[in-house]
Length: 362
Image (cartoon, rainbow, N blue to C red; front, side, top):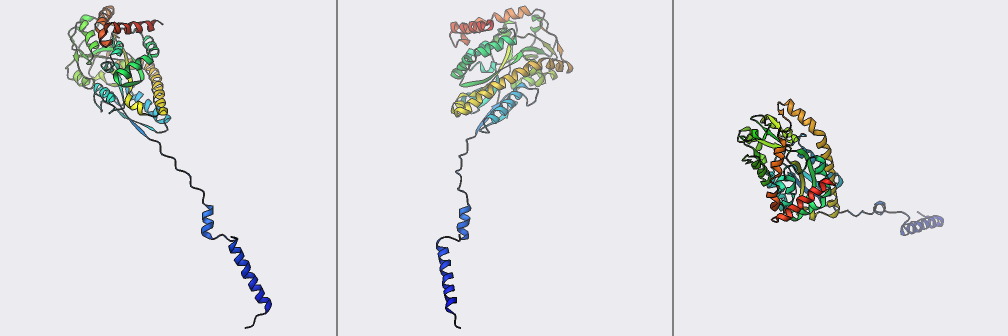
């Protein structure tokens, strides 16, 4: 077959155009087109470290328990404000041991936090024994004034002596007396009762001053001891009578009001010091906000707790008829514990008490 010169020329021209187009990239191959459409890979941000906090307390996990409510509040605040870097696991009802055992575990750093009564922190931080002196505070306002004014000094003692940092210092009213045997209206009525006390020398000392030989019983064993009549009586704030259902094993309440009940949320200083600075701030802020939350809770619960106890069959007797004698005998033991509070220095212990007394009057 013969082709005309014009057709041959046209074919050659077409071939030249195609080659030129391919060489100049006029048509992007599919693989190259797909690659050109891909966005540059973003750099992967390193994952933030998560810190787990075991927080233990000795009360039942109910909403009647202030210990449990403050634990839940601290957990909420710490986890939220740390953007999940802090994870708080709550272990109620002495699951991690008695209060004394949990304080030791927190000092060692095997447990990160504990909510504990001040009387069970005192053995590790003797200077804070002033909180346990009978009748050192006459009102909630006095107690809170001293706590707020002496906050830095209180924490300095706690860190240096006990190896724990106080995040919240809470109050729950005053410790009152309950018993299962009879109405206690005078000091004489107390004499034949077997009274449970914590293993705290000051609290044992005040009952001895009142003419009674107290029986030290661990908190985790107290309900059973009352139920089995190993002991007849104990003292605690109204809120504890409700949360621990003491109305099941106790009948009478006498408002002796001898100790301003303070409790603490403490963190292992070893654990705290290893947290990044921003998380340390989160922890401190959560502790302060939890303390304010607890104060509001405490202020609103007293009358409600009294009503609950009466509905459960307990008899509320009010203050003893001879309360001035209770106060006089209670305060008389203070000098016996100046040396303990002063960490072996009686004069130093007296200075601490004088300082507290001065802040009460400001």
